[in-house]
Image: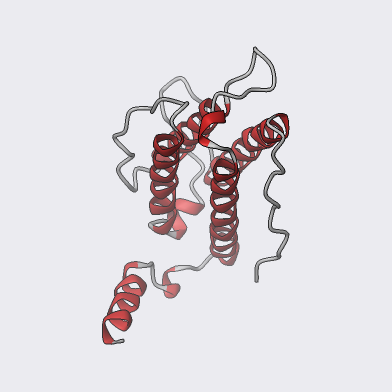
Length: 181
């Protein structure tokens, strides 16, 4: 039991102090986003897990990505969105074979772990930033913009692959409709 308390204390010490937050909106927004991001991770993995390994090449029509390709795309895009904060090292993984369920799951988890690490290190200064750039050609983005883009992009492509489950005659998992405190 003492080890558990030591781990909790170490984790709490690693988080920014509550006293460092003077902007209640920024603090509330990050807390809310963290909870919703955990939900989106969980649901995305549930959708992945629902598809049998032999059906990762399913797609609704020839012009679309396969089920596995969509998941790889979600993972890579989220890392692209969050790497601009420079708060964690992105995964150094090559995109896997989209037909390999185990490899696709590991890849997706690694990328969600990266985004979670970035979110865990954020301070008020990161949340209120309005000048995030990835290249000189891009217009600056705000943190709120990045969060919403990542969330919407994941939901968009996950919605597509939910229909792939239906094409494969699989009932998709249910989204959790619970409010966060």
